[in-house]
Length: 135
Image 1 (cartoon, rainbow, N blue to C red):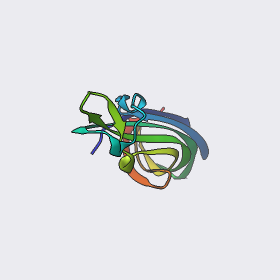
Image 2: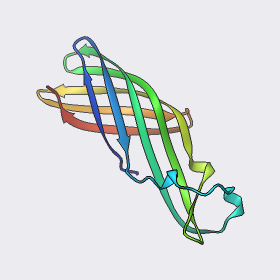
Image 3: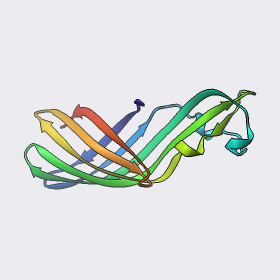
């Protein structure tokens, strides 16, 4: 599993909105050499850059359950270290583009717990679990 951290903010009564940003704070994927992966010698070390920015609608299904649907931009860039210490994208495990989310949020008093399914370009699927507070 890959751990990422983020923040979400929104407002809902019957129908509302939310914005969410998430990252693993490893930005190695933004600094890669422009060489085809099969043309370099690699060390076997790899890293992953994860970034997600989404927004969407929330709808109260019945107290305390809310449905969340959204979209935005996401990336999961897998990179491999070359023998000279630079990084090159590992294309078989790199996804960038439209990110779609669907999930539920439960409010228990001031505590909010959410569970979301997230897909990037409908090629990679992951689950997000969130714990926070509601005002």
